[in-house]
Image (cartoon, rainbow, N blue to C red; front, side, top):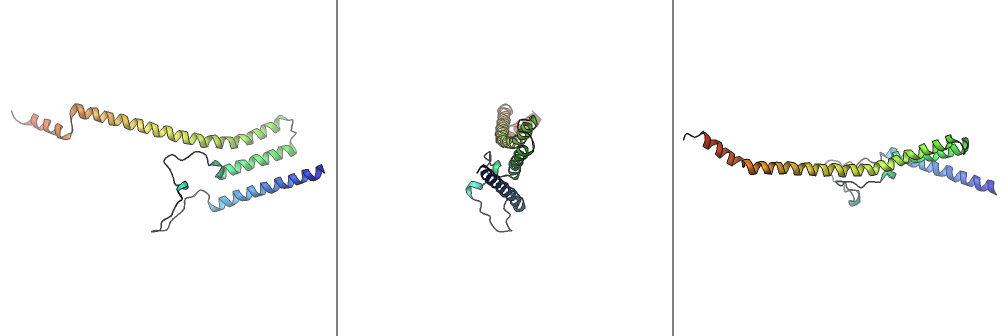
Length: 159
């Protein structure tokens, strides 16, 4: 009974791996992630939830080919280690941890990307504010174009 259950689990796991690999191949064939291309004069309607925003939400890494490959590599590494490397060995642990960290880095990078964009936007707003304040101070001290032109012409006129 145990052998039949183990064999059924193995077959199920192999089917899942094949399905996952097929999804990755199909996504790469379709050119996943490329924007829709419109012919001249035609309009492409993009659903509201797919429109690009100023700061896109982080996440969505699960739909990328890179993530799917990392997930597949993790699954294959675990199966390989379970089959060919002693479970109690340090090599087994290191290989599984390395495969896991590849996928984890993609998750963390997705979040860091959104935070980085927010920081960059805040810095731009701060610098624009400083520039506007400097221009306002200069305007108060020296006046605008017309006032400066009047001052220069008055200084050049004979007394």
